[in-house]
Length: 199
Image: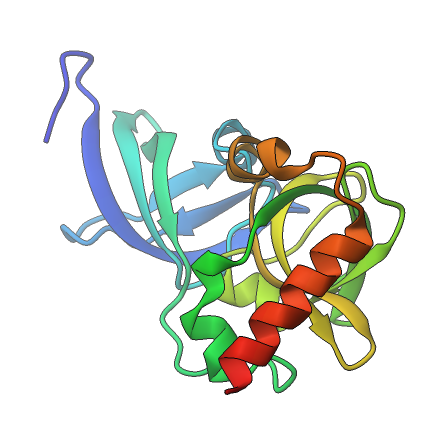
């Protein structure tokens, strides 16, 4: 599909993306040259990174230096089977959409260590972020202070993210649910949900 600006809508798998370098490449499903994905284009979509093998749909234009993505339309996480980590059983994964999506900020994240923490907007408690949950959510890395949306469950060592989304999804779907209820009430709701999933 081509629009009036001469841009073409294409989909492909992320070959690699390096947030430090500020760019990566998408495999062109139509064959030919790979498509450059610049960090600024990804940031305009609300993300600072994307996991390798994620399926992305972008508006692309030919330039003197080759094909370049100008806008990200969608990102689908890499295909995988089962839960991202053992602390999340298949019941949680199957009912993930039933968990509230909360807006949060990354406190810190260390990709080399494989984990980090975030804070839900309006609540001081830390939420554990595991690198495999990120990968299953289509992210490769997170920056300190980055705004994200998270679905939270009670893990064996406390609150942990079961899914990570871009900020705009967390802000639009989660902010309305952050009323006067305390985080303790939200944790109890999660425990009730988890007990139901375990039945």
